[in-house]
Length: 125
Image 1: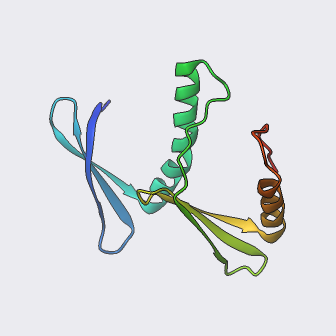
Image 2: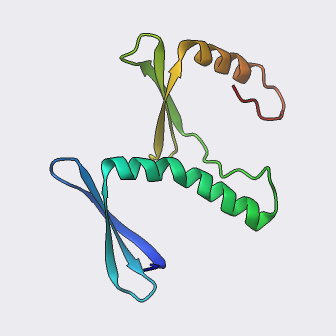
C-alpha cells in the first residue's frame, strides 16, 4: 500500500524508549501513523540523506548537487573510547547529527578545514 504524505504532524516516543510513532496526514486527509523500533528508525535516518541527494541530483541533472544544512552550532566531546571524539553538528532550528571520529581523523579534518581559503574539490578520507 502506497501512502502519499501531505504533512507530518507529530511524533511520540514510547514510554520504554524502544519505539517511535510518526503521525501524518495523507493526501486524502486520513490520519495515519508509522511505528518504528529505534533500530529501524536509525536505519531510516542514515538512508534518508542519500535518498534526498539522489532524488535532487536526478531532478536537477547535476551529479555534484548536495542537500546541505547551514550549521548553527557544533560541539566536540570525549567519547567512551579514549581514541575517539564525538562531534555534533546542529542547525539553527535544532536538527543535530553526532559522529564518532577517531583522533587521527579529527586532526586531519581540522587541518583540512583550516587550510581551505577558497572553494575546493571535496576531500574524502
